[in-house]
Amino acid sequence: MQVWQPRSLQQLVLVSIFAALAPLCLAILFTVNTLGRLSETNLEVNQTVVYATRLGQEIQRDVLELERRARQYLALADFELAELFERERSILIQKLGALQAAMPSQSPDIRRLMGSLERIELPDPAATELTTEPLANALPGQTAPVATSQDRGQRVSHDFSVISEQGSAVKTWLLSSVDQMLASNAREADSLIENLTLQLLILAAATLALLLFLAYWINKPVKALTQEIHQLGTAGLSHPIEISGPLELQAVGSELEWLRQSLQESEQQKEQFLRHISHELKTPLSSLREGADLLADQVTGHLSQQQLEIVDILRQNGIELQRLIENLLDYNRLPAQALTLERFDLEEMWQNLLNSYSLMLDKKALHLERQGHVAQWTADRDKLRTSLDNLLSNAVAYTPEGGLIDIDWRAEDATLVIDVANSGEAIPIEDAERVFEPFFQSAAKRSGPIKGSGIGLSVARECIEAQGGTLTMADHPYLPVCFRLTCPGH
Image (tube, rainbow, N blue to C red):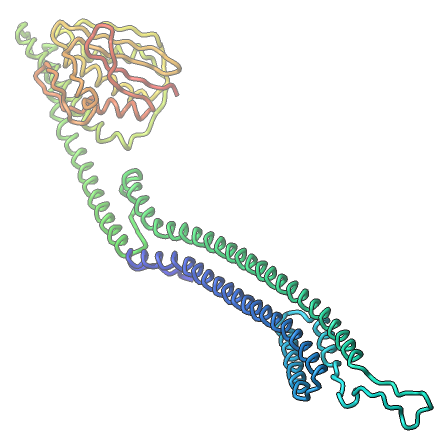
């Protein structure tokens, strides 16, 4: 299944924004919903509590009013009062039923109170009228039992005493039920808040995970572009560049691929040019050096001392030209060269190098001091020789006539340290690091008819850094210019 890909960076950003806002909107929705439910529940509980409390107070008041109405009836024997008593009792029983229906739990006290109210019967005044007349069929001296108003008042007082106790029990039950409702509502509110907190934590975690995914999603094509650029600079020009993702990045990838092809074509043209220039320069230069050697050997005939000096100048400058050409070729070949490690004699290497500079040393009457404390070393012989050759050439070129060149090599912590110092003009502080840049030439004066190319020290540093070493400027006890080369053992 193909995964959906945004067509542009704008679309990608918009989708990411809306996706990141989705959990936040859900959190707001859950919060509003929970607060709404909590508000409705609190409103219902508050209404029920207020209604039940008010109804309980009315019932207590109506019970007292009903008792007062019964005593008025007993005192006055008015049938209208009896009818009013019946209506008030019916209303009171209805209120008790409404109170029972309003509360979440059933109360036996309400049922008992309702039963007591229903059992109250007002006596008939005609049947309970006071009399002292003997009964018609009574025995002499016997009178009929009569109900006095005092008996009726005691019976009503007893009934309403029971009703008052039951009303107090109903009141106690009502207060307890209201407290339970409020406590239950508080527990439900706490539960809702806990659930809301849990939901918010889950949504926060989901939002964080989504943001991390979206950051990865947005960064993925940019990272791929960065990797392609890195490969372009490190892995060479043979790797084709392909960028997937938004249209803008694909367009950048296409431009990079065009740049890679252009650089590859330029690199091929440069390599072809170097091959041609190497052949074109070395062939006539070899002939010139061979002719100069024949003249120096006086094969063509005897030469005067003045003529031999001219031939020596030709030979010297032929060697210098060959070295410059080889430096140029080495500089362009360095990135592609691999290390070839071998063990060799350092004294022999220095002797061979000095032999090639013997004419220049003699011509400028340079005094050479050398001191070595390491006989053999393991490294890339050719690269190390190239570095030392350029250091020695630089010292010979910048040391004035009659000057001093000091060479010292030693081992420090499994590292070969070589100092090449000369008595030439000190290199300015601002040029101390730039002298290793390609084609840069210090303001220090150079002697000799051939001007340097400015890449000798750059080639020397790259050759030694390819072996894990360093080439820097250092302080010398008594000479103004000193280059220090370090080469780790392999």
